[in-house]
Length: 143
Image (cartoon, rainbow, N blue to C red):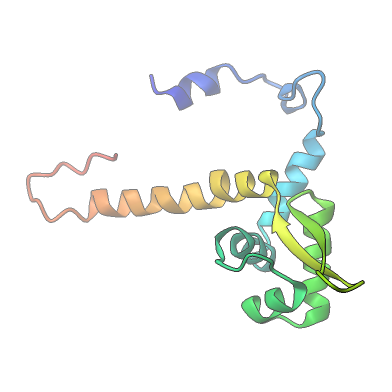
């Protein structure tokens, strides 16, 4: 039996019982994080915050990256901050009284993105490779 199947057998009947007694987050908060990453623009924001080469991604940089209006991008980022997937950071600018405000994905944001949507996309690539094998003797077994 695969680890996934073994884990599924140990799941409680009631979804409310999934969390440990002293869980930091509620089931509603976990579901809210997944819903947030399900929005195309918010997915792209978290993805770009994780995988861009830019060290400090400001709001202006995000607007340019995703091609959405400034106000809409701000709303999306605010929602992602509320859901705990993105963090707003400030850094003092050397020799100035100003600060640089930038954004980064949180560890929860990375987990929800990488272990959720990107895992499903990776599996689709694996399935495609398994079924498109040019070897006629292949029986199409999944990886």
